[in-house]
Image (cartoon, rainbow, N blue to C red; front, side):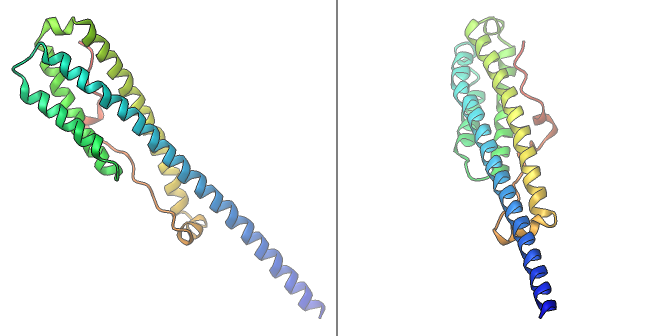
Length: 189
Protein backbone atom coordinates (compact mmCIF):
# COMPACT_ATOMS: atom_id res chain seq x y z
CA UNK A 1 0.00 0.00 0.00
CA UNK A 2 2.85 2.37 0.81
CA UNK A 3 4.47 1.80 -2.60
CA UNK A 4 1.15 2.55 -4.25
CA UNK A 5 0.83 5.87 -2.37
CA UNK A 6 4.38 6.88 -3.31
CA UNK A 7 3.78 6.01 -6.95
CA UNK A 8 0.49 7.90 -6.97
CA UNK A 9 2.13 10.94 -5.35
CA UNK A 10 4.94 10.92 -7.93
CA UNK A 11 2.42 10.64 -10.77
CA UNK A 12 0.38 13.53 -9.37
CA UNK A 13 3.52 15.69 -8.96
CA UNK A 14 4.60 14.93 -12.55
CA UNK A 15 1.09 15.73 -13.84
CA UNK A 16 1.05 19.04 -11.94
CA UNK A 17 4.48 19.96 -13.33
CA UNK A 18 3.35 19.11 -16.88
CA UNK A 19 0.19 21.17 -16.37
CA UNK A 20 2.18 24.17 -15.07
CA UNK A 21 4.58 23.98 -18.02
CA UNK A 22 1.68 23.68 -20.48
CA UNK A 23 -0.06 26.72 -18.97
CA UNK A 24 3.19 28.71 -19.10
CA UNK A 25 3.78 27.76 -22.75
CA UNK A 26 0.18 28.49 -23.70
CA UNK A 27 0.32 31.93 -22.08
CA UNK A 28 3.61 32.66 -23.87
CA UNK A 29 2.08 31.70 -27.21
CA UNK A 30 -0.96 33.90 -26.58
CA UNK A 31 1.30 36.80 -25.66
CA UNK A 32 3.36 36.38 -28.83
CA UNK A 33 0.26 36.09 -31.00
CA UNK A 34 -1.17 39.27 -29.48
CA UNK A 35 2.15 41.09 -29.94
CA UNK A 36 2.24 40.05 -33.60
CA UNK A 37 -1.30 41.34 -34.13
CA UNK A 38 -0.41 44.61 -32.42
CA UNK A 39 2.75 44.92 -34.53
CA UNK A 40 0.72 44.34 -37.70
CA UNK A 41 -1.71 47.02 -36.56
CA UNK A 42 1.23 49.41 -36.14
CA UNK A 43 2.29 48.71 -39.73
CA UNK A 44 -1.27 49.39 -40.89
CA UNK A 45 -1.28 52.75 -39.11
CA UNK A 46 1.97 53.81 -40.76
CA UNK A 47 0.83 52.58 -44.16
CA UNK A 48 -2.40 54.55 -43.78
CA UNK A 49 -0.35 57.67 -43.06
CA UNK A 50 1.57 56.97 -46.26
CA UNK A 51 -1.64 56.41 -48.23
CA UNK A 52 -3.03 59.71 -46.97
CA UNK A 53 0.05 61.63 -48.18
CA UNK A 54 0.08 60.20 -51.68
CA UNK A 55 -2.96 62.04 -53.15
CA UNK A 56 -1.57 65.38 -51.96
CA UNK A 57 1.81 64.54 -53.43
CA UNK A 58 0.27 63.52 -56.76
CA UNK A 59 -1.85 66.68 -56.92
CA UNK A 60 1.18 68.86 -56.21
CA UNK A 61 3.23 67.21 -58.94
CA UNK A 62 0.26 67.26 -61.34
CA UNK A 63 0.20 71.04 -61.22
CA UNK A 64 3.69 71.14 -62.71
CA UNK A 65 3.78 68.03 -64.89
CA UNK A 66 0.37 67.81 -66.51
CA UNK A 67 1.51 65.59 -69.40
CA UNK A 68 2.70 62.79 -67.05
CA UNK A 69 -0.80 61.35 -66.71
CA UNK A 70 0.26 57.68 -66.89
CA UNK A 71 2.63 58.10 -63.96
CA UNK A 72 -0.08 59.72 -61.83
CA UNK A 73 -2.55 56.97 -62.70
CA UNK A 74 0.03 54.30 -61.78
CA UNK A 75 0.61 55.88 -58.38
CA UNK A 76 -3.10 56.19 -57.63
CA UNK A 77 -3.75 52.64 -58.84
CA UNK A 78 -0.91 51.25 -56.73
CA UNK A 79 -2.15 53.17 -53.69
CA UNK A 80 -5.69 51.87 -54.13
CA UNK A 81 -4.50 48.27 -54.50
CA UNK A 82 -2.40 48.56 -51.35
CA UNK A 83 -5.26 50.12 -49.38
CA UNK A 84 -7.67 47.35 -50.38
CA UNK A 85 -5.49 44.41 -49.28
CA UNK A 86 -6.22 43.41 -45.71
CA UNK A 87 -6.12 39.61 -45.58
CA UNK A 88 -2.56 38.55 -46.27
CA UNK A 89 0.89 39.72 -45.27
CA UNK A 90 2.55 38.48 -48.50
CA UNK A 91 -0.14 40.14 -50.66
CA UNK A 92 0.25 43.37 -48.70
CA UNK A 93 4.03 43.23 -49.18
CA UNK A 94 3.62 42.78 -52.96
CA UNK A 95 1.21 45.72 -53.11
CA UNK A 96 3.63 47.86 -51.11
CA UNK A 97 6.45 46.92 -53.50
CA UNK A 98 4.30 48.04 -56.43
CA UNK A 99 3.44 51.30 -54.65
CA UNK A 100 7.10 51.99 -53.84
CA UNK A 101 8.01 51.53 -57.52
CA UNK A 102 5.20 53.88 -58.57
CA UNK A 103 6.39 56.51 -56.08
CA UNK A 104 9.90 56.23 -57.51
CA UNK A 105 8.47 57.00 -60.94
CA UNK A 106 6.64 60.00 -59.51
CA UNK A 107 9.81 61.37 -57.95
CA UNK A 108 11.67 60.77 -61.22
CA UNK A 109 9.06 62.92 -62.96
CA UNK A 110 9.44 65.60 -60.30
CA UNK A 111 13.18 65.64 -60.89
CA UNK A 112 12.57 67.16 -64.34
CA UNK A 113 10.75 70.21 -62.91
CA UNK A 114 13.02 72.63 -60.99
CA UNK A 115 10.07 74.85 -60.02
CA UNK A 116 8.38 71.85 -58.42
CA UNK A 117 11.49 70.89 -56.49
CA UNK A 118 11.49 74.39 -55.00
CA UNK A 119 7.76 74.35 -54.14
CA UNK A 120 7.32 74.58 -50.35
CA UNK A 121 4.28 72.32 -50.30
CA UNK A 122 6.14 69.66 -52.30
CA UNK A 123 9.15 69.90 -49.98
CA UNK A 124 6.92 69.49 -46.91
CA UNK A 125 5.21 66.48 -48.46
CA UNK A 126 8.63 64.99 -49.22
CA UNK A 127 9.70 65.43 -45.61
CA UNK A 128 6.49 63.89 -44.33
CA UNK A 129 6.82 60.95 -46.71
CA UNK A 130 10.41 60.37 -45.66
CA UNK A 131 9.35 60.37 -42.01
CA UNK A 132 6.53 57.92 -42.72
CA UNK A 133 8.88 55.64 -44.69
CA UNK A 134 11.20 55.54 -41.67
CA UNK A 135 8.29 54.68 -39.37
CA UNK A 136 7.14 51.95 -41.77
CA UNK A 137 10.63 50.46 -41.79
CA UNK A 138 10.72 50.41 -37.98
CA UNK A 139 7.23 48.91 -37.77
CA UNK A 140 8.19 46.21 -40.30
CA UNK A 141 11.28 45.32 -38.33
CA UNK A 142 9.32 45.05 -35.09
CA UNK A 143 6.58 42.97 -36.71
CA UNK A 144 9.11 40.59 -38.27
CA UNK A 145 10.93 40.21 -34.94
CA UNK A 146 7.69 39.36 -33.14
CA UNK A 147 6.66 37.01 -35.97
CA UNK A 148 10.05 35.29 -35.68
CA UNK A 149 9.59 34.81 -31.93
CA UNK A 150 6.09 33.44 -32.41
CA UNK A 151 7.23 31.15 -35.22
CA UNK A 152 10.06 29.83 -33.05
CA UNK A 153 7.65 29.10 -30.23
CA UNK A 154 5.18 27.40 -32.58
CA UNK A 155 7.87 25.22 -34.14
CA UNK A 156 10.21 24.40 -31.23
CA UNK A 157 9.79 21.61 -28.72
CA UNK A 158 8.03 21.51 -26.23
CA UNK A 159 5.96 24.59 -27.05
CA UNK A 160 5.08 23.12 -30.46
CA UNK A 161 2.97 20.51 -28.66
CA UNK A 162 0.91 23.22 -26.98
CA UNK A 163 0.82 25.26 -30.21
CA UNK A 164 -0.51 22.33 -32.22
CA UNK A 165 -3.02 21.44 -29.53
CA UNK A 166 -4.47 24.97 -29.45
CA UNK A 167 -4.11 25.75 -33.19
CA UNK A 168 -1.42 28.42 -33.05
CA UNK A 169 0.04 29.07 -36.50
CA UNK A 170 3.21 30.64 -37.83
CA UNK A 171 3.04 34.21 -39.11
CA UNK A 172 4.28 35.33 -42.49
CA UNK A 173 7.08 37.88 -42.53
CA UNK A 174 6.46 41.26 -44.10
CA UNK A 175 9.22 41.13 -46.68
CA UNK A 176 10.07 43.20 -49.68
CA UNK A 177 10.47 41.04 -52.75
CA UNK A 178 13.04 42.74 -54.93
CA UNK A 179 16.33 44.31 -54.00
CA UNK A 180 15.35 47.66 -55.49
CA UNK A 181 12.27 47.83 -53.28
CA UNK A 182 14.43 47.31 -50.20
CA UNK A 183 15.58 50.89 -50.58
CA UNK A 184 13.14 53.54 -49.41
CA UNK A 185 11.96 55.87 -52.17
CA UNK A 186 14.33 58.79 -52.62
CA UNK A 187 12.54 61.90 -51.48
CA UNK A 188 15.40 64.41 -51.37
CA UNK A 189 16.39 66.49 -54.38
